[in-house]
Length: 277
Picture 1 (tube, rainbow, N blue to C red):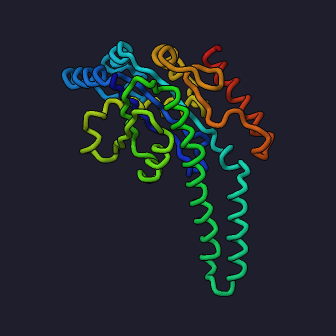
Picture 2 (tube, helix red, strand yellow):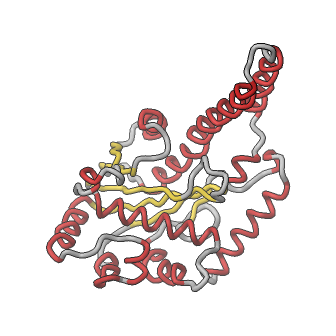
Picture 3 (spheres, helix red, strand yellow):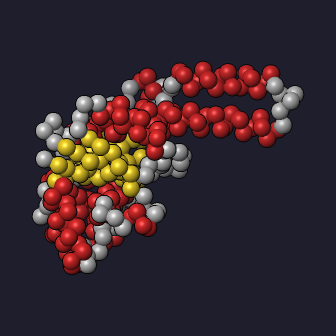
């Protein structure tokens, strides 16, 4: 049996203003997906966006609801990443600061300021990719993949280099029959390919999930949408809520900040109340 899994992200690991990093995962049989693409092209239906889904433009939700989609959402609370104590990062930065002091007489002022920032950003890139993003991918594959399937994972181009992403994918997939393709929404020629419908839906749902976590769904339109169309086809995550899976749950004292534990509990309580669970 051949399947597609479509995934897109919302939020950014490198933007301190983003409180969450979210990935949506949407699984569907290959033959069902191609039939759905044909329906979209024949009836000239609007592609899924947050706006078109919440407005149910031309009844697209009822058409999507008929299909055997499986949904899953993984997320990282970003201040946990920034505040987490990682010994290797601390040790490297200690050495960097020591070297800059030793070379202070030959470095220009802007170099003394910029070198530590650039190195710290590079370390954060490597740590997030190989710790957090890899667990987003690992958690999703373990939940969505069955041994009797052949799966094509289609991911909108992530905020990492494709080569770096492929390395963690190859490490995680192991003996599973999964291949990985990258889509590119910003490239119009690429985005109008056969994967557009799947990536559009993944993009929209990731954005909605991000708004739910940020508590920006003031009129409950997204909550109502998820309850009506998404949760009934979602897999149970690790926080006791259908669909939602938190990377590195639960927070422990090793992160070096007890307030993160309280924040995590409050977040899960708030989500539970939204869905009245």
